[in-house]
Length: 189
Image (cartoon, rainbow, N blue to C red; front, side):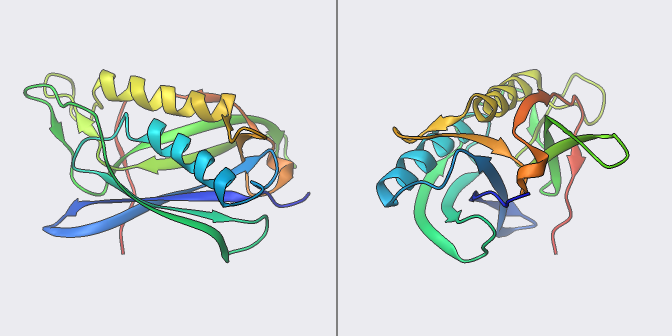
């Protein structure tokens, strides 16, 4: 199947006393934004939704757009947007390589008839001081849930609506989402 365009969102945060960058690349259905104005509208909407579940220690720094099947950017916009999540007293941010796993379900199946999922790792995870070790606070999970559902519903640039999809059209669009309770991790080089 045909490749899909994508938008990469880069976020800066502190890890081991140094500023680090993590990012997620979101492939989407709905066509390629027509021009910089449409890309800007689209990326502004994604950034506005993503800042809600992130704590202030995370700052969205860059959006980069790619045409289908290409690793050469066709759009870039710098940002300086800090996360908005207020951390409740006693709760705390996990270590830098801890992450929340956003998981989207699709209607696609593998050649062995297994379901195909889409994943994104989000750093700046907040842990529940009263819960079992590694439990992500419910108020952050709820906000990540809203972010995932926004991708399922789609972001409109005024002309097209872009829905989370896999890198190839065969993986289809996201139709649902998972909500893990516990933290996972992603290694940094």
